[in-house]
Length: 119
Image (cartoon, rainbow, N blue to C red; front, side):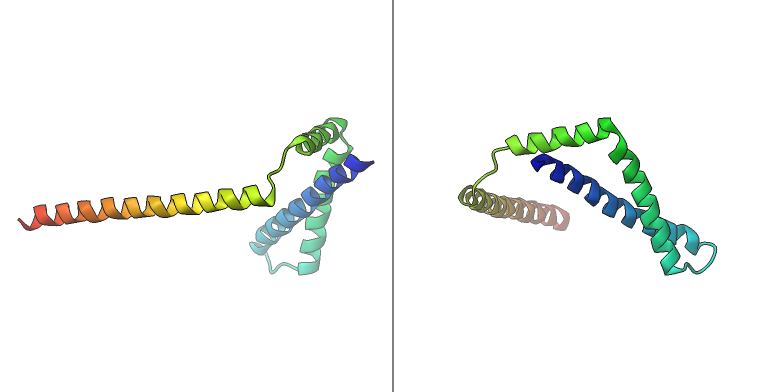
């Protein structure tokens, strides 16, 4: 039962995202013809999202595919807090050094270009 709750959670999040997309799409399309009624737009969007995701939830192949993803994520070795913060510091320092190098190149070529154009 442990992994099935994650599988159902994936489909629930998919339904929420799909419902949000369908609500906005319905409101956009309906807005061309008349001022949309917010209740009906929400009901249509949620129903369309539920139907769309429900069709995939009922398919055995889609359910197995999500199950494989959940099993694969369980095997991932996630970094510790120490490893994550160390890697973050390395990235910040590298970006800072790269910015200094790019600034130097930009300043140099700007100086050269101005010198050529003013001569």
